[in-house]
Image (cartoon, rainbow over all chains, first blue to last red; front, side):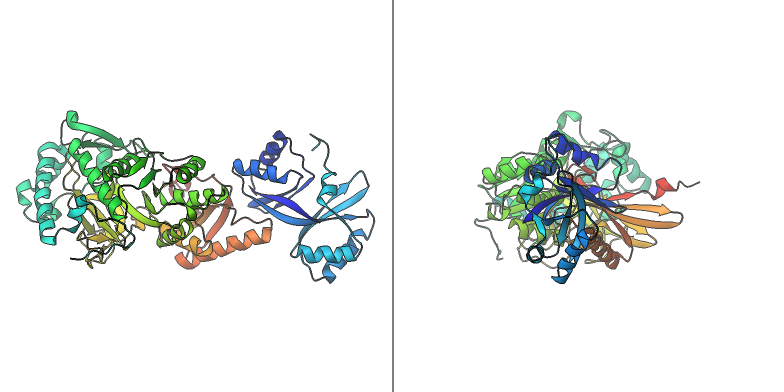
Length: 150
Length: 448
């Protein structure tokens, strides 16, 4: 149930976000979703993509520093309180959320939350026991727009 | 006399006999060669003659080695001012080789070699490699730059004279370096220490474990490096790493080298006379005290260099070395007098920053020190190229590492430093040497 997330180090300078995106686009690699964590000095671009191994190779060959970490993706009902149950479940299991981000699955009209947990295995068990709908990588990658769609 | 050889599988090279001369004999050779060098320079080099005349010193006044102190100094600018051939002591027709510095600031400096000079150079480099435990049968990959820079071709000539198999690969193209190192059964590697650290990381990325290769000896020089860097290299590549010292103005690599004891560099005193002087007063400092290394060539024909101010700071290690060499030792060059930064009145050396960074990280990242003046306040920023080890997908983790680096620098130097992580391969390098310091204070606030 764990998803590989590819992170890239970026300097916080104009134009620095465009380069990796252009490199991936040129290689025909689709991005399911991405988020940018930024500070005044640097940024971390986090990507979910099916061809993360290929993307990593291409980006490292172009001089980027990357890191692959495992995250958990959860489908949430797009209505008030949808997220609350999730957070309570994770908290009750004693698992910390390092960070999270969300995007919408337009086809199903649902939200998708991506969690980086300090203990992914523990978190997955707790969420599954609570009946939460976890997305495996196969389902998640299907959410990618068709070629050229990002 | 008994010699100790640690990891050496053969007897020492016969040409290394000069390394083991009794002291009196060595000093007699030095004096005889010093006198002929000064005579040659006085007779053929206008700059030397004019300065000696101004001081009222004649070649015949040099009767002992201590009389060197009566001679005027030479500095890098003398080489620039006489560009290109003004310091040559022989007709150009006798010069068989020219080298030059890259000349990033102003005109390059040009150095020349007669055939005898080339033989001297090969001899000292050969003895340097033998001192590092190399011998016939070794396969050496020379990743110093070839061309006008003395590093590549200097090592090259000495390695061939030793009888080693030489791979003149020159610098750059890390992937090919690793491939050759692995496929050619390379046993010795020569380059700058910072480039080798880069290669260790690159090899790991390529899935090549340097520890399992036949590589045994590293010959590293052309930039100051620290004991921490040596420990890292020796551990991560499973080799013995030796410091080689030299500068183009004197001959190139091969002025001095470490022996298997790895405790200071033996200077090839039969060809180079050295003094350690107080950089301010020019007076000699007692053995063991730090000062500026000043070198006089004793056998160079094309370009004799007398009392050259190297700006390298070191001290004499007076105790006899257990390797048996009678050549005197100097401590590794950890800093240069012109590298010293005075920040808010505190002396700071790049080597201190390096040691601090290595304390936090097990690898030494590429870094650059930038000093600015904001109104009347000096600001030090250290830019560090992010590595896979430093990088995390969590902001807090990266900020924690930056804080630890900043703390380590502050506790070592007493100066607060802003740590700024930059993308890989974005800091300037030249000839494989990292450019460590960027002092922008004069540019920022021009003096009225």
